[in-house]
Length: 198
Image 1: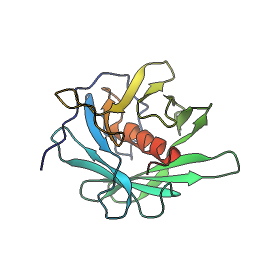
Image 2 (image 1 turned 135 degrees about the horizontal axis):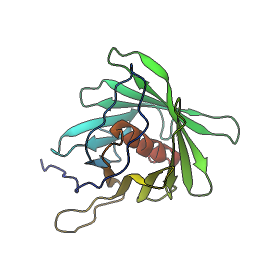
Image 3 (image 1 turned 90 degrees about the horizontal axis):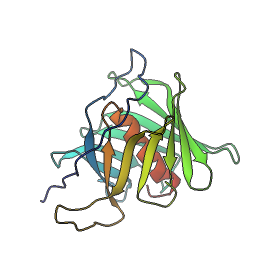
């Protein structure tokens, strides 16, 4: 089986740090390959590959496409984030809760709602830090920017080393240094849910 290799990454500013009891994946810049297909037969979700070409994370939605709840897991199947759609009429938003090492769910970590015609806005609970997701509606290329306008992460269609652009369902996520990788990956998953790709 061929390995899927990501492209080199770009840098970005750090994200808001969580409380002392919450784990955080703050690493130097990294690139992930996001395949918008589930590893579960007849499942809806996506698979995230690391720099080594192996499965790093997976997202499974055991209900229908665009369901109300998905689980973001590591390669061993341990739940890291639970994402739920909260609907209050026209005020639809998605809320993410992080899981601790002992499997206990924490308070809501961040929430995302549509902003404008083609974008979304994310707010981290507790510290109030915000991110804008520009042009995420029905596009496979978009950027996640902080309140200061600096790019925290970018996603685009995957290109092979020889320059061949792969299909719409294979993407490269570049996460900048100092940005929480789970936050960036969670925002990409929510964009997939908003666009009914998962």
